[in-house]
Image (cartoon, rainbow, N blue to C red):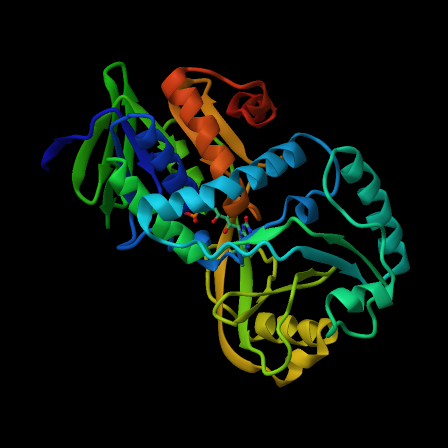
Length: 374
Ligand SMILES: Cc1cc2nc3c(=O)[nH]c(=O)nc-3n(C[C@H](O)[C@H](O)[C@H](O)COP(=O)(O)OP(=O)(O)OC[C@H]3O[C@@H](n4cnc5c(N)ncnc54)[C@H](O)[C@@H]3O)c2cc1C
């Protein structure tokens, strides 16, 4: 087996999280190699994502997760133009706003309560709206919608393009991308870390583990038990014939949003189906019939395609930071429904911890130490 010296830092996993971390480390002058087992970056959960940067809709209660998500959504505002400059790839960020709607009176009361703490925390959100106001925002809404909130600041991006942009900017910042490099072994000893990937041995001083739903396997090789579970999400893409969809529509069931290409994405199921990442007839049927109730005009849309991806779920939310048993290994795992949203803040926090040795207080609730102790 050929022996290569990979330098300072190895990043395992070329999804949005690993790519973002590698880029930020490269920008800060670290010598970085990213190892991805697929022939292209961003083929895991990242490829399946709708790309919503929806901190508001994804956080049912106030707390550290909401704060992290809001900070990351703010970072995205400068991240997207910087990535364009650094890579030449446009992430197709659309700040179209998000309409959170419901068909249930009980849920309407919950949304109103949610609004109170969100307003108090400085988030821009409308008063609770009735059916007429909602239809003013999205004229094609179905008759069952009774109430909702408008978050005018919410944006979405094109997840494939995000992965491309991160890879391009990373290369420019000196990151070495090793594709087709599936990591099959990982050891740690007093001299450093050794990984075997694609039949090649890599040595490094530090390792960032960002292998998404496949995170547990490599961790067990370090004697660490942390169960990252794959949660399948199916998505359908339609070519509408009617009016454009002016905002993201996020219901108690599916959400719908229109990409710059004109495609409307309908997502997403949440299923425990092991590592099977294919769409099913049942999943597609459920999404399309719910979407038709939400936006009846979609009934005449052309069916384009369907896909599925595996969201990396960790009980208690993402873990970001150094392993207490081996601080040379940092985790960036368990971003579940929000990896695209959380990529910039994850990259910033991991890079600060790794390059400056700082552990910002906002990382504490997500630290592996806490989770492993719990
Ligand atoms: C249907 C759907 C819709 C979504 N919508 C949104 C959304 O609107 N907004 C949002 O913020 N998030 C969304 N998400 C969630 C988001 O996609 C994930 O949180 C995010 O992609 C996780 O990124 P990751 O880099 O951790 O994992 P992944 O993207 O899965 O990347 C992990 C990478 O590690 C590689 N890998 C694994 N094992 C190894 C190994 N042994 N050696 C080398 N490489 C390895 C994999 O090949 C993969 O490329 C959605 C997800 C799904 C499925």
